[in-house]
Length: 228
Image (cartoon, rainbow, N blue to C red):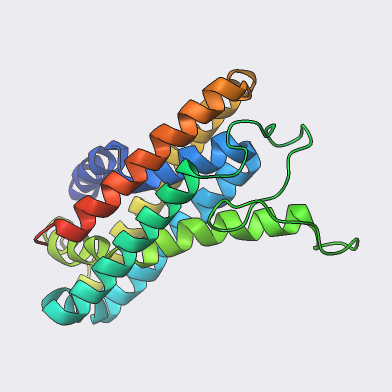
């Protein structure tokens, strides 16, 4: 069983490091707001994976994957959200001119738009808004991605270690996938944060906003037009 688990983890690791919408979203948040916001986004992504994992173990994800109508609705909603994030990156007011986290920048909502502080007590104002927005961005992007349901219901059963009940085996692999995703994206956020002074340059920020905006829109179009 251990050998099978190691082999399955290797497959999941390879799939995890392939660039996709998650990496684009994390790049956008980490570059615009810094390490803390990037890590909160990773937390939201992990929560989205756990949500789909729970649905998979419960058998609900298989029903969604088998229903063309429901799958289409979720797919189009997810594609629209990615395109929305991309457009906001391209047309962000003053894009490229705001400093990174810790240098006097303003908070942003779940779509990355500037927001104003609305209080002075703990848990209010720019820090609280930014924290919630980053987490929600990661969560919504994954919760509206039916491809995760197809991935979990189609691949995990074939990778589940023998000797465990089917549900337990898939739950174990979901946890492995979440851990790998968090480790990989957190490392990526750390690498980006090490170059924060470079990304703080207005011209670089504008370029990154445009690149990530185009990439997110591209992923949105790809999701919307994909057959599965």
